[in-house]
Length: 215
Image (cartoon, rainbow, N blue to C red; front, side):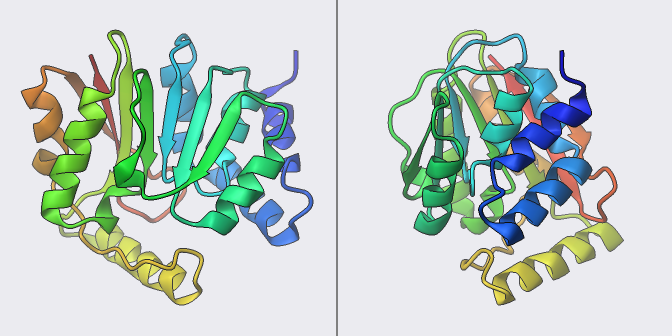
């Protein structure tokens, strides 16, 4: 059996064709605690997985390398990243579509949405989260990471990062509509989910929290 280090390297090596993305994948998988946390939450499930705002498909690559291999569908509005994801994950159970994460196709299974919700306005956030809740199968889980709108240096650091990644065009859409904890949880509480919320910043300076909602 491969060690976790070797598994992570297998995920990163899928992006060797793109040197900048390879470096990004190396740093992201090494430092972002949401990736191993998501794997631990999903590891016993065989339900289909929907990854909203999937980017280059790095989470799918990470999960695949760790042995979590259900049907996976990633959706992202950046068509260039979707082309990278499709090529990098060719031969796996992961498929990718370019499109608006708010307009995902009918789904029943697990859903992951990492660092996406702040790109939508208040009404869009609530409608989107309710739609995610309706897409979770019995025994399934929704995993949402979001920066919360709360005072502190981590919140300021996250806003600065968002400005930077917008300026360098890594993500072409500006997103500063950070929700409160209640705004994230309310749609799932209404649907009777069991929730868990924990800080998820690891070695980073950012104010991310991981929300887990189980049906």
